[in-house]
Amino acid sequence: MSAASVKGWCPGALRPMLSGDGLVVRVRPFGGRLEASQITGLAELAEQHGNGLIDVTSRANLQIRGVSEQSHRPLLDGLARLQLLDPDADVEARRNILVMPFWNGGDETQSLAAGLEEALADSGLALPTKFGFAIDDGRSRVLAGNSADIRIERDRSGRLLVRADGATLGRSVARGEAVSTALALASWFLVSGGVRGGRGRMAAHIAAGAVLPASLRGETEPAPVMAASRPGQYPQGAMVGVAFGQMLHTTLHQFAGCGHALRMTPWRMVLSEGKREMPSGAGLITEPFDPALRVIACSGAPRCREAHADTRALAAALAPRIAADARLHVSGCGKGCAHSGTAAVTLVATRAGFDLVRDGSTRDEPALRGLNGADIVSDPSILVGGH
Image (cartoon, rainbow, N blue to C red; front, side):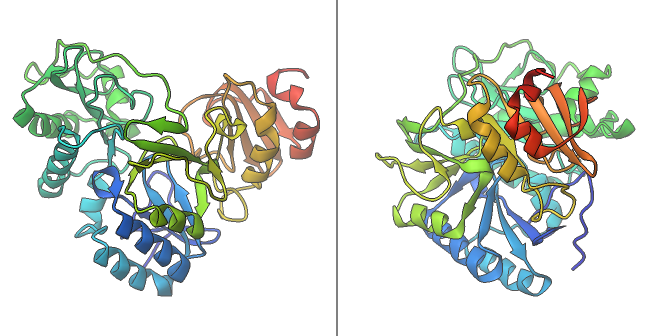
């Protein structure tokens, strides 16, 4: 199987991406949830067919790292037994759905997710690989800050709406219309030229002047945005962070040992369903204001073949020195795989050292270039403009 690393697409299970430590195989849990038996199985597969490292991504997925060309096929067989595999790579790529984790049994979140998954599988839509959906149907929105092109939400009175990302208002829909309206929006995006000009995202398409048709245009304001979620106890279970979005297979095994399902989140945290005490394990974040929560870092060298530095080591050293209300992003290259948005400080590794961007992303012009990582650690005032 060919698995070259190509900028502009994301790995899957059926279409892995080659990195510095082997193939990266992305697993997309159906409905954003893993049963205890699936957690156990994934931990075992990561140990048997990978290097034992598991990423928790900003798209609420898991990635098994260090997979070889020879071990990829038996890994896929294992994922199929766990019912975690799509019928083909095209269906897998379309099933790019964020599901808000704070749902309760009997509400509509899981049925909406299942309906959208089935409809996307049957649709044949040739959507861009990063094009995604969000089911954020609580009384407050928790996924507003996360990347999605089409959003199923609620208004202030609790009624469902479907909203194109980049549009302020959404279209009110009955329960049975939500999925079909979301797919109609996706179809409109394609036929109206949303992929032209290299945009490939709904908000950029609308910002460039595309006008929604009257049948999809909304007049309904979505529900308010909830404050950022943090590790701790919630009515649905225990929310725990994963330091820099990576854990050992033994840590995932510990979750399975609890006997609880896991709900995935796009915040590099997982919710242990129904658990009434905080889990413990290597690399887990259980305190709501742990400094590691302020820092985003990609896999970095030597795990990623395109990274120019060990991002994790630098991120860990700088985390305690970042202001409580600030965010630091350390990227091993200019792609910004771990975080596409802005941060108070972004450090981008290059062959000549680190470039520093303030209040921007990896795509923005650096304020400083060629910085040495050790110098940043010894004098963190560099980060805030002390030099």
